[in-house]
Image 1 (spheres, rainbow, N blue to C red):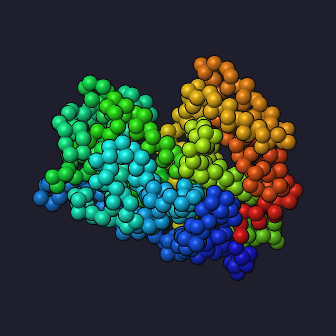
Image 2 (image 1 turned 180 degrees about the vertical axis):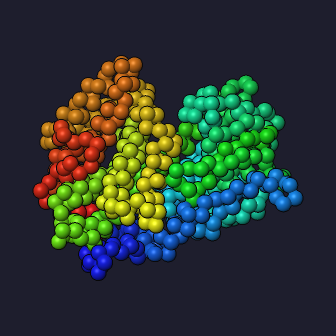
Image 3 (image 1 turned 90 degrees about the horizontal axis):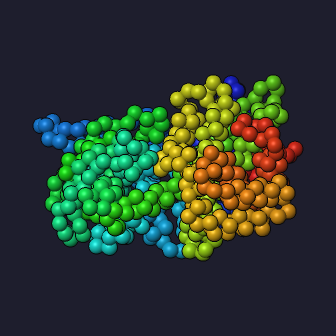
Length: 545
């Protein structure tokens, strides 16, 4: 970033920069995971994401929301969602950059970290398109439970081109998948779902069913298929593959009732739908639908962690860029002590969030016992923490911009409206904290393994070591006593993990600043109280090249 001053003291747009090469924390994480083979491609993607053309595309997609067309001019039910061309550009970008499939088509070392880097960058520029893209990727391990179905779909899942045509799947090059879990009477409590599935008999892809009911949130209704929870008469909640078009070429009777008028994420279509005997195929074991579809949700929770780390990075980049170019009282804002402290604090937040997200992504490619335990325990904690911090920091970054931040013509307003979606998607904050406690109760050895590992890393840092020991003591209490403390425990776990990662992978100065600030008794929800160091400029430089 240059620090030239505009004659009107107005800040130029942050555009035509490389999102990847300007982010040393991300680039080192990719190398550390063994994904150096992907570096040149990520450099290309970074230039693409930071280009003025990509930024205009994202604005057009956001300001031209999708439109629902339930019927054709002659009254035929079509349930079609019309998108601005910019949406399809964003979807094509996500697809060619590997966000729909990379870890499953390339088994080179560090493939999950390579994937994570692309998603992290894409989320900074156009987040709505990440919803159907990451759900497509997350559906792959679930679809593999039905081998005949998976074999038929795999070429279209692995294709790197975006096929926007609304035609039967047999005629398409590629496909996208979404998810239908929640209903209005239960929300996160999917055990209360009412949608039912009636058996139709055995087909080429397994047991076929007719599905009747509704979904309160049906993400990305123009996806070529969805994984849907419905109850069978015999065994209850089961998971089904439900395509937009039946195999015979007729439209599946999935009626879109309306598109949700969301606070943010406006480029993407979220809908409410009704099923009127929609054709579907059983995935996994009948009656085991919730754990089956939760496997998909586990992968999308990783994506929430990565995406929110991207939001934090974007907030930092926009705030730092503004502060370097805007002058007040004879100095650039970045040189004002209070502003420098705030920016340093945001730099630490972004750096720790990136390390947390990329470390977690890298562990998704491993079957080592520690990595499996880490994923079960840390995934919900990381989703809770990164998503919460993104909302808070986006608001602070908006304040850095002053009044110019609170208008829709700038990038920061869209980021502010977008940030809360990841906290809600795939389980809100309380659900994540309760999932941490469930992971501990179901696999106590996982918690011991993770805490032992953390304690080894932070052994020389008294405040962090004390926090890890306090966690260990808390988790020994009966589960019924822990629920009230769920958020406190999850926050402490996330901070201990971030501290360990900073000690391992950040500079000694940055790690020391993180621990000095985050483990100070005065540290709390107000960003900018302390950056933990007198050399704030070094923190800013460590997080921007």
